[in-house]
Length: 287
Image (cartoon, rainbow, N blue to C red; front, side, top):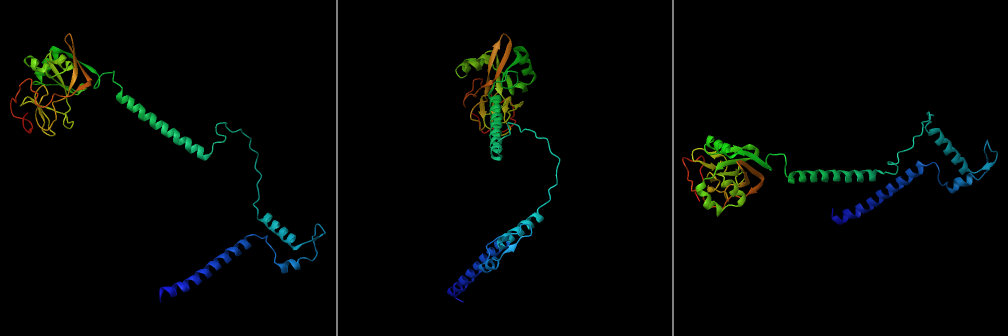
């Protein structure tokens, strides 16, 4: 059968089905309501006088039909049960006139405001300098003689976890070269014979441990190596170990862990310290 023939048959069938659907819908609407327009034949038959029992006057067929509809509706209506009266309470002024949309809009605005407030408070807490000690504040490490004794007991290294730092001795013989490389906040500690180094490797942020055999700092993550005062000796690190600003008052040594100073550039070697023994990790060549 060709497509043209199929279309020629399908179009009339669809038209007939549409007509049946419209006719059924119209019939459903007519039967759904007892009131409607009477046919001309019925209207002629209803023109004769009809006496209502309660009024004694002639009425039309339409009035009789309407009365029957009303009676049927009243009989189908649910019976209302009388309830005890409830004391009237005036509504709250704040809730009068609040629509569903207004409620959701206000809820969304309040949620955004709370979220932004929490975020802003977190940012301020992160940026606000700490005044209660610990990392990010000034730490009084102690008396210089006591610190040097702790360094000697640690084989040349002293670790202070509250400041996330290593403290090592800076040789006085290296001060002349140091003055050409380092800043005054660094030199303040170096001239007292100490240097405070951040434990974080400047390569990818691993914690750098000491190597007791070589006398250097050697990062176990990627092999970066630094001499005892944090100057780079090998590995992929872009510079020496970062250090903190230092202050000396009398014999008290204070480290400002809130002020991080970038480590010295590659090639800096003020102390001339070479490895004192086997390495703990393999570096990628010295500089």
